[in-house]
Amino acid sequence: MATLNELAPNTPDVNHQGRLAHVPSDLLPKELVGPIFDKAQETSLVLKMGQTIPVGYGDTVIPTTVKRPEVGQVGVGTSNEQREGGVKPLSGTAWDTRSFAPIKLATIVTVSEEFARTNPKGLYTQLQGDLAYAIGRGIDLAVFHGKSPLTGSALQGIDTANVIANTTNVKNLTAGDVYSGLIDGYDLVSANSNNEFDGWAVDPRYRSTLVREGAWRDNNGNIDPARINLAARGGDVLGLPAQFGRAVGGDLGAATDSGIRVFGGDYSQLRYGFADQIRVKMTDTASISDGTNTYSMWQTNQLAILIEVTFGWVLGDKEAFVKFTHGPSTYTVTLGSPSSGNFTLTLNGKTTANIAYNAANSAVKSAIVALDDGYTTDNVTVTGSNGGPYTVTVPGLLSIDGTGLTGGSTSVVLV
Image 1 (cartoon, rainbow, N blue to C red):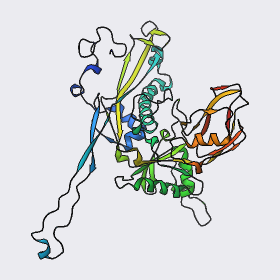
Image 2: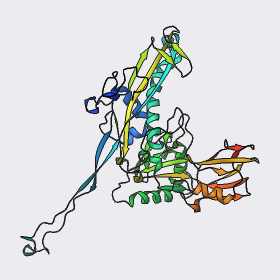
Image 3: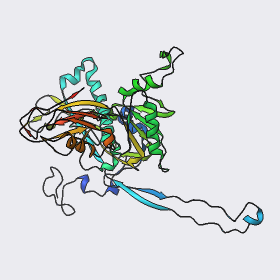
Image 4: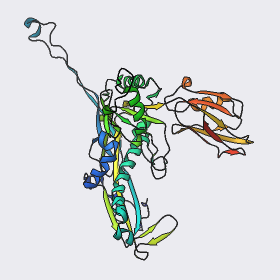
């Protein structure tokens, strides 16, 4: 099968054009980073909190230990007579493997040559730095939510078991009891002896909530502002290191807010790597297509700037992490008297199966509870008449898609 836009001859393993897709992965060089990587690292939670591994253009296979050796006592007691000559016990070990394939992240931005030469207010210089920033955002959104910031849609071809938000460990934090909820989440992860809970990734919008509930106060209940630094990119929560970044919520670029405000867990189980270094290319001679129109950079006096990287990651176990939402929130869901069809609801980025236009409130609740998000029937309340309006109380962000309805006008309003 030919690769994308490959000219003939293009028969794999027989006669084809020069493409990396046709080259065995062990023949391809592996390089890590450069100055542009450093810029991306400044903005990326993944590059700060994960651990690097070598990654090839093909599948990368990682051995994992599923059984470690254990020691036992020699002899039957504590005296020399009971120890000496004793038979040493046998133990064993076992291994498994995890494999993953990298994805390519890239974007092109065009500017006029006049814009590049004059560099108004340093905007052209800033643009080049913003491209590295975009790579960091793209990496974070891929690892935490499995989405593309350009389209907001799910990435294709990735293993969803390597997406942190797909953990089934979830806690809903409530005002006045945030730190108890964080400790409960810590316990969920730490219940598995293979996990070492070692850090937090926090949405910056949740920083003030953590400060209000955990800041030192004087005898009159006043917070000492000298002890607070809202500008810090890092810090600690309950004594464990914390990094702050918008990728936690998931609303980067075209992607929507997931309602998640904190991820905690064993970040030593997050491994990432680059099959090649982050590269920037510039051209004033290529022809660039936007999917509809094609323009010659030379003929239109423009420059095209490309940044790209081939990146891969793997989680030892997605259940080594826990996600935290904050709520619950109550919404009024209105369908507007449709005559037929169905609709879906999306809670914290996960979408229900189709719900009939005239569904009873129990059917709406069942559809929400059926989501694979860790929440149970106790976390969801739905009241209202058949066909709505419904009053829905859930932990997180709720939205509706009514494109499958005939007639009516849908809305979700926070009460």
